[in-house]
Image (cartoon, rainbow, N blue to C red; front, side, top):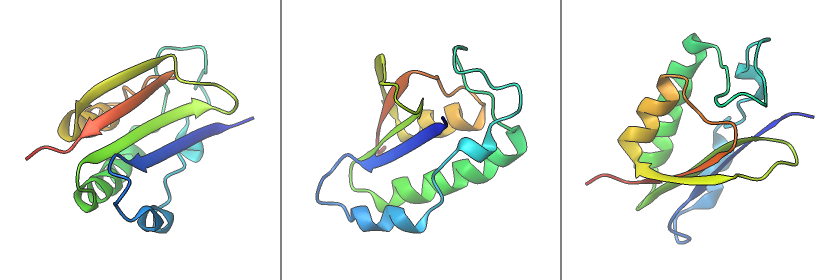
Length: 109
């Protein structure tokens, strides 16, 4: 089994093919101590900075923002958290990605 990362544009009119040029999968960023039963995933902090920069590029390419989730294969999100794009970027960079949440990050003006 593995961690499945999913990013989608909120606006269906945005170019979804653009996402294919990015390496969005986070499985290889997990530490050996990561536990899918924990509240938050445990990623290598030094790699999250690069991931946050990539997410920022994706958000900039969107018209309304993105949805983001990092769930164990076969699991479904048990909560939906709506926040701004900047809040999502801070959350990812600070290693606070919940193991069971889908994030809806609305693009800031």
